[in-house]
Length: 339
Image (cartoon, rainbow, N blue to C red; front, side):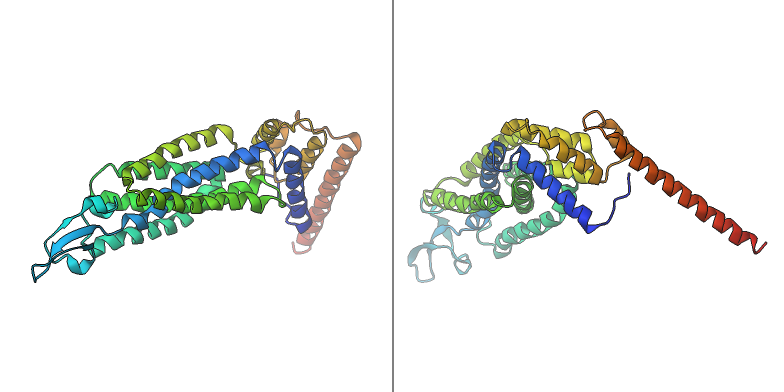
């Protein structure tokens, strides 16, 4: 791999070139709107498992008889669990604490919120590793983790419920970070906040949907497995309709995949006839940290160097070689003085 020149001017030139390429292929076009719609739907699907946890802890309505043989019907609290009681299911919300029979165990109920937060903390750490493989790839992994969590709810076991709860927290935080990263990579500075706000609003929309459904006594299984189906559809569309951003491949020095990413977005937006795009790609090639092998692989796709450029490079290489010879001769003379 060629040596990367650590120079602020060169780094700034890299940034300017990638921004120009994004502007040429479209940073506020069909591709961006397609991605933001898919990410909004993914956001709705993923955050149901996360935002729904506080609702899943809602206490049921119980009917009990106190020490004075007086019958009451109240919202359960832990002090009432000492009385013999029956659940008033037609007036209670459909929740995990009822179906898993933990509504009278304060520790078990509190573990739901604790594990969800612990999963979120783990997600913030794990996502930093996954991002090395690309934000798009990492988001798909986060979606698969969320799907796995939903499937665990099929098992009527409290321990498995806790595992699902942990992964709900983990996948949601991961996806939140990655959704913003993806939109930041494919949008321009002037409209980036607009697209990010649309994605963030998915969480607020999820809260409204959840509380409307629970107020109408929808079964929690209907809500969670409905979001599961929606997540499968949106993730599949995201996989087939999007590509990893070209900036990711540029940083890796993977020029062929960078070109493929640029061409895909340009074709999607109908902006693939831009003559200046080739010049910017050549500029990135000169500025970037690309290996000699990569340069050879893509030589036919890049504008060829003129004779003066080749001559300049040859002169520079020759000067470098002469300087090295002078240094070596000086070192030899210095060593001979002590022999």
